Length: 440
Ligand code: PMP
Image (cartoon, rainbow, N blue to C red; front, side):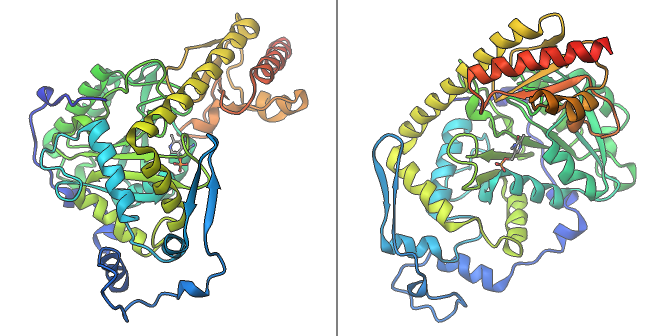
């Protein structure tokens, strides 16, 4: 499990109010939701005539038994099922929150030393996938005209969430190891660190990055780069949004230290996801970060989803409780091995069919291979119009450009779903498409 790198940093005080936009600053607690949140922690002996909640005895679903792939099963009896079908606390089912906080402590050991599962500076809330957490974090922090720093290229879901907020997306150049710290330094040098509290100076306040198995690039940041980036974030008073759904899919090595593990100041908001390791359809993600900011995300949830599906949370909680952390990690090992084998198969097919036509780097995490097609400066037309007739689908690199009008010579291939034989045939078809395209 990863260790912090606090020795590289000198602690700085945070003023969270400066990061909130007007909408988020205006949010107030919903009194009914606040009561529901309290009820979730009260003993069953308390008689509640307070909540406007339905009576679960009227619900048609009574209990569930879910078979696991290892031959065992999870039983959700009628009492637990009533909880699963009922309204629940906004931040998440309390036992799941405790489980996940313990996990965060084990994996990242956030250096805010006062942290403990139920008291301290860190907070965590369960969201409907990490996507919900991320979009709420953006909607909390971004105002029109803000300058937001992010990996270029990056996850299309992030671009789509940020653009309508009217901010300027400033792409930070990346290579096969993620953000290039010197490039970030060069960009930031346009502003003075002393101006970071002055709204009229428009210093960037946010840096969004995918540290492991980047989508689309497959790139993973080294610890050395993370340290440099964290130091720059301290110097320019940036909040780092660490979007890490591929954290558990780091092949062949120890988990890399996260930004959260370095976060001596409380300037990191980390988005995690169960989508790639347990289920994407149950929609379970979680955001971890400084309490004053996560509390604002929870206020937003109070008036939007109200909470993540209690049924999904209870199913995941039962699974995690049955396994314990050790069993969870064993499961992760199996998933990692699966994707690593898939990656190796895709790389072998890339060697076989695309050598001379394209270039790529072997990703050390995630589920994507980022391929530069040598003599095709813009892959958009080739993929969107011609690939389908060859019965091969990939995503053109332009889908991940901050400015969708820009061209891209890249395509993203995923090694998650197709069999090695299908991937091999797919790259054979891609090769013939490239040959046709470059002859034309
Ligand atoms: N961030 C990144 C980088 C992703 O690739 C994805 C899923 N494709 C998400 C966030 C959202 O994942 P989820 O909401 O399923 O947790």
